[in-house]
Image (tube, rainbow, N blue to C red):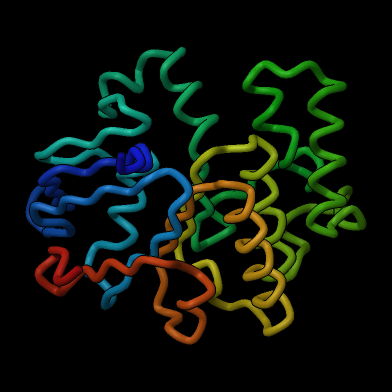
Amino acid sequence: MPSDPEPQVLEVDQVSYAYLGRFPALDQVSLRIAAGERVALLGANGGGKSTLLKILAGLVFADSGQYRAFGQPVDEDVLEDEQFNEAFRSRLGFVFQNTDAQLFSPTVRDELAFGPLNMGLEPDQAAQRVDDLLDLLEIAHLADRAPYQLSEGQKKRVAIASVLVMNPEVLLFDEPTAALDPATQVWFLDLLDDLHRAGKTLVVATHDLATIDRLADRRIVLGEDHRISGP
């Protein structure tokens, strides 16, 4: 008998979205992402890659169509339910392109502890998670520094750590290799390999065709008409 297909963790069905109701970003986009997949979103600026990531992250909501995550519909109303919101946010992490929009705590250690503490972990458990991530991502020496004092590569590591500390099942990255020096870029690609081997589902919006073979196994192209333009 054929093996069962991988469960779909993210499902977008005929989703459309326009900024201010009149500037189209997505037009009837449908997409299925299975558990453990590595998917790249490609396309020109303005094609809708970042908007699609924000819909997957529950940061903006489709004007029409439906989005389901982990088998459940996700919209503005259901995310008002505190229990659902907490479960959704703990299972899916989003690393912004602009790390300054993501990092807000006084120190790196505070930044990493924010998520676990707000999800109800005991302080000692949260502290252990933070120490583990600081060591894993080789940023323990930055623990007591303010994020604004860091280089772009260091900020990117801290932003990724602040998401990984929640141990999400799905990771969304918006232009993750932009502005990274070569050494940090290699470090990031190695990290993605490790996350993939650990069974994480990875979705990456990128222009970086030079690294696409390391970033993803499946590519999805959003055209200038804000639709998926090919397989």
